[in-house]
Length: 134
Length: 93
Image 1 (cartoon, rainbow over the protein chains, first blue to last red):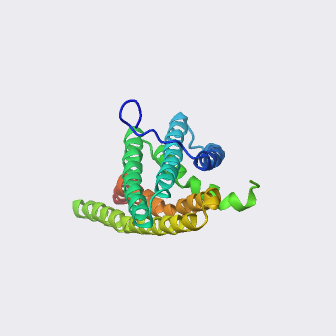
Image 2 (image 1 turned 180 degrees about the horizontal axis):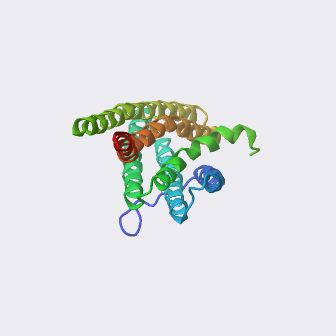
Image 3 (image 1 turned 90 degrees about the vertical axis):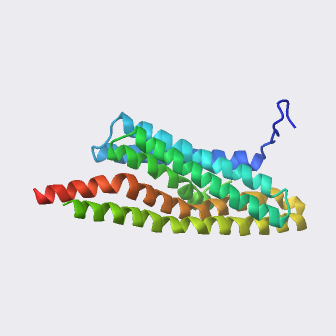
């Protein structure tokens, strides 16, 4: 137990490494998305803010998933299964709420799209994984 | 006109609800993946790092299906109704 009664989790090196990898690709893809918005003449500073919001949610979701997976592998099979299922529900609810907050804050349609698209960037990062040397 | 707008809004809500059915699968898939990973780590504890890396990537891929559904549902709830109603109003004018 920590000083204030909280469990202090020691974050696994693998989780930090993979989160850095995913975060770097999310940033690269975000820059590409900004370029696309510039090309189609839909760019303004709110698109950038929306993109930052969505990217932060995507990276935070991956990091939270890593933490829950790290916790789950210390347990037995049944508990691990339950932990991950519960974490997935929690993370989905959190993503939904944060996305809706982003959409409520930003009223323009291109900005709303810019909030949502970064959520799927981690998938592209994982897809490119075999082509990147470790 | 009100009926048409009502149908559009209702269909958007139904579509969003139907899309979120896809959110059930990733939880089950990730649960199975992690359970198998626990078994693997139990058999070979020295492989913990590589198993965790592979599992994280697998979980990320499994979760994407749900995220696609979530993105579609949010678009259907918050973005599509305005666009569709505007298109309808412009067509009527």
